[in-house]
Length: 192
Image (cartoon, rainbow, N blue to C red):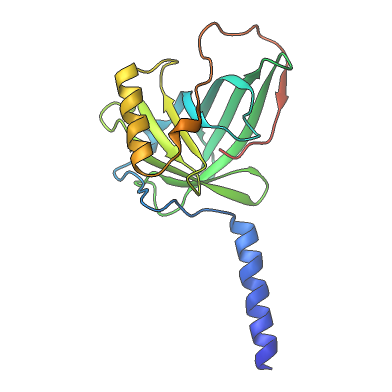
């Protein structure tokens, strides 16, 4: 009977981990407090990222956030593939992990699988820039409300991320100038 209980507990733990996904946060990264989701909603431009397959080769990357009827946040990511000459979009949903006043969410673009979205740097006065981590230090995004960020501020944010252990030498800076033509959109899975 004791062995059966241990096996049942192990299976339950494994299933829970699979369904909840990777919603931890990197060592040393702390989400902003006093977060106001209403001020975060709207369009953000990707200034820099650590590259992953779901965004590789994309320029003109934006993320649009809006409220969902269930209290979560709708996420619509969009980027242009120069190679394929087409726009790609990925729609997801995000929910606060601890509470709406903390910049710590779990986001899903694929069914019940979630990943961390940790806002650890934020222009708390005007909500004009943000730095986001995923579940580990191989995920990093610098976002801004405008397609370009002041070079000095951008370097300051990069330096802060490097001080936390992110490999900022691998950052990709997607093109945001000269928007490509409006062409058909193709949906793509993403993890942001």
